[in-house]
Length: 541
Image (cartoon, rainbow, N blue to C red):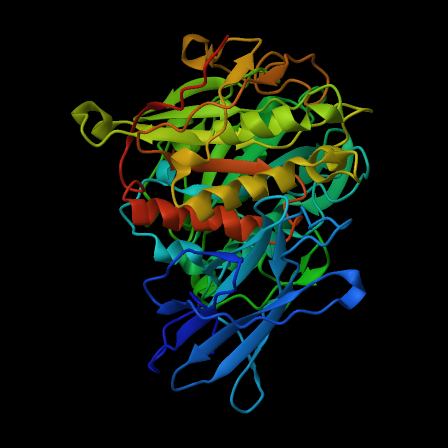
């Protein structure tokens, strides 16, 4: 049986039954494609393996391809002197079919702590992360989708100061990443190569494009889109005009056949993984620009399936057809590490942006998490006719780096028992939203912010400068964010959407599927296609 979401089958789908346990709270996010029954009868086994009491949960399927069963053990009661696991954990589901062959269940399960004595099991559809956008309608505006992304996507070298990721680009895309942050510098006068600051990340821009073209023309990738933010890292030593021209030429003057050469296989130097042979469509296409969305406007999903959406943090439009209107979503005003963030407009869309990276030290990880997730909150208002013509697109970075006291890995992953990382907090936040079935009950408290929100629309746009987009990425002083006391849930409709760019996205396991599933919660709640009247209300004090 194929994983849920990986394709249709003519065979009847099984009804998966989850045996509920006494004193074990099971939360289920239902799927229209799979009938799941939560049984009230308990199937309980007690044991004292390793000094811990355990119970078994039976995940069973009944249907023409079944029976299949997967039994999992969970610590659900705290014996005297022992503590329950506090970390969110994805359970490995490996079922057996009638002939003892492995069967992939159409769901995945997460165990998390509900109280000092009880655990919960969250069960979600097992979507194919390489092609989940196919389950979202063409008409949905891109601002209404939660797209996981990676900050400094190619930065896999330079630990502990420069490294931000551990996985190659193709692996990121197949894992569900849909927003990539590409930082480039000019080498030998003509070659664009990935850099993080002054550290070479050793990947040619042409190899990055080859990876994207191959993925987006694959059977899984043709339903997807990828937002590519491009920023110049060597602004101090190479002209901005030359950088802009080289990016332009890479898009318009290269051929797909040229990018996908070497007998149909080209090494993905972000990790050495070979790419599959390019398709006949790729070989027959003379120019790669057909795979780009270059309008200075935020599109609907149906306009950009199989395309790269250019997000330009460089240039002033010189040398591009239609100037800045032809080099993708364009903004070169990027306030440096401000809190809580800044707003700026592109046609009918307001970007609600946050990139507070200079947090001072790793103990500010809770504040960074609070700001990163609060930025993703919008309030749809279907009753307001003026809101139907305007969109809010949150763009939020969960990454941070202040050398030496807040290294990227410490902020994202934490430091042992001393500090929980931002990523673990994001995973638990997403779990709370999904288990409650109502985003308004899991939103964060208002934030006490030391700086007012910047309105970038009042600032003059132009070529990159040290004060705008091209400034140093890790050097300025920052304000601080403090979390106020917990606010009551907001009774209005709440949507979690936008672009969330993360460091070390692959940890903890399951974080990306949890974030992706929020899109389908929005869908079930009827808020995915409703424009927002205003950005998230973050209270200043």
